[in-house]
Image 1 (tube, rainbow, N blue to C red):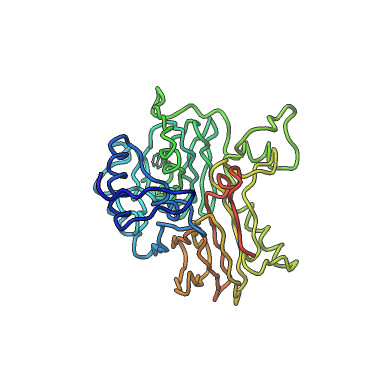
Image 2 (image 1 turned 120 degrees about the horizontal axis):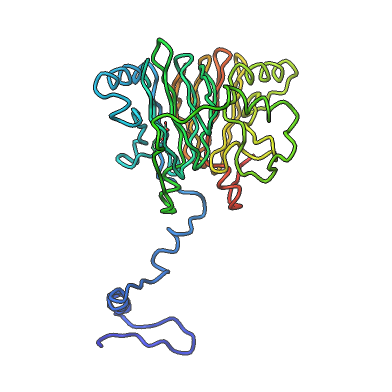
Length: 355
Ligand code: 1HN
């Protein structure tokens, strides 16, 4: 072969044609499905996190009418789940709001049911509008109100219904992109459209969220036994924290949705918080390796992400990509919900924050 440089005594290869020799080599090993690491090493192992995810905001006042319109175009029965998916603008067509999470707005009209099924992906709901529709999870029929945080843990039967007189809209967040990354997705339908409800709304919160635990509670359970964390129960805690001055300089007065059995996260894949930002709050910059989905549940303010300001009010959903510095400000007393893949990163030992 012409121009192949010879390696001598540990010295770097010499010769004018080293690049063409390398290219020739790459071609030959490529035929055996092999490639040189040194050509891709820097991209494979960047010095700091590199994200495909773009910052983005969906303002409720802009998207709300599309949700209504979807109700005229398809029934919940036909759709199985009537959802408008939030696609990260840098990842269109992939049903991702961040690299690891899926999110969308679901509409369920009076009289409709969304049939019972289960899947390996975990889901959470954050209620934005309506009152009194239900989701049934493992036999507990949970009535929902705005601000309620409801979990559908992996492989639990779930169906929804709306026996109220008003449409109900909530945000769904699922770990679907992650489950599909592992290629570990299963799903099945229940043999009935609606599972039998044998526990009242609030049953699991009463049993597990009152400072006592039923004898023999499975302490190692990876997800919370509480199905619904009602806003009416959580919101006053934020007021107590604010009154006591427990307002963190970046996050405000913030609580974490926890698994009462072991203090872990409510689901093993997705971690959520609820934060109160007092009127006039000017948060300091923060960044962490978990990109987060934020939802405004009260008030009005803005979040600066890498120098660009995104103003928000009720129902707006916005994204802070991984490792991007951001700071919240509130012009009125505000409440922000947030959810991210932090539990997954923590269990892998890769989660980091910059303080
Ligand atoms: C799902 O089961 C629901 O149960 C919502 O409401 C959205 C998106 C993809 C896959 C399953 C629900 C979903 C979903």
